[in-house]
Amino acid sequence: DVKVTQSSRYLVKRTGEKVFLECVQDMDHENMFWYRQDPGLGLRLIYFSYDVKMKEKGDIPEGYSVSREKKERFSLILESASTNQTSMYLCASSPAGFYGQYFGPGTRLTVL
Amino acid sequence: SQQGEEDPQALSIQEGENATMNCSYKTSINNLQWYRQNSGRGLVHLILIRSNEREKHSGRLRVTLDTSKKSSSLLITASRAADTASYFCASQGAQKLVFGQGTRLTINP
Image (cartoon, rainbow over all chains, first blue to last red; front, side, top):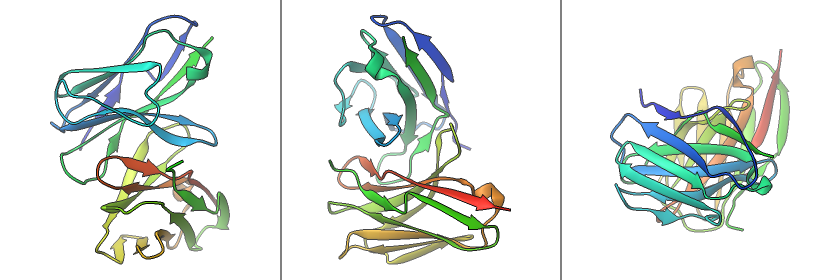
């Protein structure tokens, strides 16, 4: 079975801190994605990547950056965390082409 | 917003009954997908229907797609308590998935 893991289930940070969210998949998938999920707003795409060292902006990239140095790992970085970045963050991966995505368990981030 | 819409937002039925959820999307698609999310967890991919398909089955799931109306429906037959979850449709165009707001399904024993 495909496994997508995220580094933390719950995370509490302070305003202005630099935050790293890590995602690792074990199925050699080309595509990886970062979403945030908020009540009433659904899932919104932050960034995605089709290959190592490649990245594309999603719908809400402001305040975030990403890194993909290895195929299996996709990191989301909050350069200077703000309270409006308190959310559930979901990582996903998929093979190249048009297929379903496999999601990690999510990281619930609280920024105080 | 590019997001699709789902209807109803919440649905509560008795165990053993069928549950139907509807989804509308806004742009032309390559495929449409349905996902389930248990409370506070990640999403699980349930089924994918391509734009040239009209109906697809997987176990107790039946999905229909009407590209002329830009709509899809998910039917869960003979519901079980374990089906209690949120269900999301996601339309895929050239690149990314666009998710609907979700339907919260509650199965009462």
